[in-house]
Structures are given as C-alpha cells and as structure tokens.
Length: 140
Figure (tube, rainbow, N blue to C red):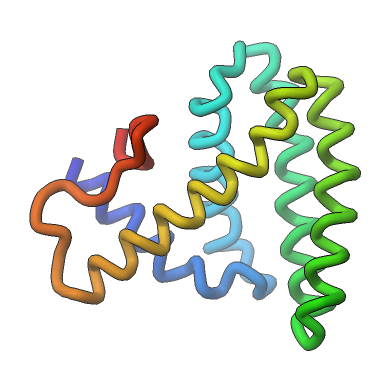
C-alpha cells in the first residue's frame, strides 16, 4: 500500500506537467488513468484490449490540445469538448453508449483524486490511508 502511495505521489508531482510534452510523466499518468478507468467500467479483457489504444490516442490528443490552446481558455474548452465527442464515438464502438460516456466521468474522478492526494501530501499527510471515493478510489 505504501509503495503504491509512493508511486502515486510521484505521479501527482508530475501531474502538473500534464500539458507538457514529457513522456516520462505523461506515460505513467496515462497508464494509471487507463487502469483506473478500465476497472471502474468493468471492461472485459477483449474490451480492455480494444479500449487501451483508443484511450492512449485520446490522452495524447488531449495533451496536444492543452499545449496548443493554453493561452485561450474558452477555445481550449471548445476543443476539449470536440475531442471528447469524437472519442466518445470511438469508445462507443468498443463498449456501448453508457460506458463510453462514463469514460469522461471516471477521467474527472481520477484527476480529482490525484489532486486531493497531492493536496493532502502538501498539508503533511492524510492521517489514515488517503482519499477514497464511494466506488473504491485510486487506492484499491
């Protein structure tokens, strides 16, 4: 458990460089996020095998979009929505409509949990195991 927290802390520190083109941090974040989302969606091995490359492309396109539009928040938001609509259709072919919409919900949950863990680490510890959401959290 402590080892996982240590790894997660390392990922959290790299999370701020999310929009930077740094494959070391981005690759690890993408890997953890993919695992988290697959687990929450309850994907079969077949679905997970088809989902992973699509999600990798989405993740990389999202990073690229963040880099290209970081100066204009409104344009960035529009581009992200367009990107998600495009990838939702691709996810739908793999796992159906409901789960394809849930991908983005779980993506947000992952990001929120990582931010919470980081905030707790900066405040001097969590005092007992770290944050968990009602569906099990990052730490399970």
